Length: 348
Image 1 (cartoon, rainbow, N blue to C red):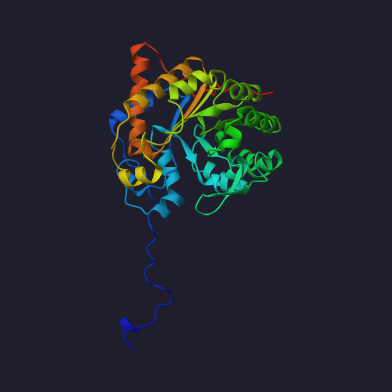
Image 2: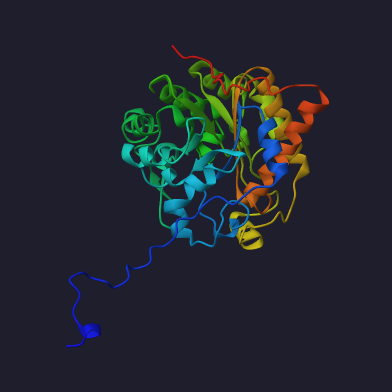
């Protein structure tokens, strides 16, 4: 047997090539400057992070959606302007404390997660796979179920990185919109049974429910109204005016959908979500005003942008950060909280 043909005592076959883990793309000096000048109490974030079209904007290489879903969060969180993120999958199925703990381990202490609560808690109807309304939902506003399946795992898993827990109500139907007081009574009873401490926010999609009684119920429970930019709801400034007492110290905003578009239309129009297609300067201006106002009250703000708002959520937030910083500069404001101190009001 020749030397070249001898068997080796060791396996010399090359190891299978491991897929490279996506990293964070370098940002421009302009973006880094905006991040340095942003108040620490205002956190900007995207609605999820698994978008291949963000290559060169957030991510440093091409990656599949499934790869980003598993490995993209830590790279997304390294973007200097992105200090929050929305988790939407929790609307459809619960996550365990370990699931949340894994997310929390991917980000630093100053990062916050906005988490949507299970639809089983907030939808008065059971729906089929196509979203069609069926029978009444027996778990609608069931506080015991919400605590066990939503609140407890989130608190245990995310700890100090937990931001707003958003109870998003879909359109609830005529039975409740014709008599908003009935909805308010159910909501007030539900919130009263939740453990104090977490930041609870409520998002509605029926403008009829945005009434004084609704705001009073939120304020009484120490909960926030989540301002959502969505065609079904009044303009964000109007929401803030009506819900003044429920957005004073903790401001949660979800910039979801461009006016006049449905979700499927926006998805098809904006995919692959790598540029601003339909800039919305009016909404951007209002959001910046509200964020700065809350900062001056020493409150905390979390703003989540969706790709379907303007075409690319990270680029939307860069423009928004520019608006916020411009307002601070124009009025001679400093960020007011450079130390990153948490100004959230304490709960008993």
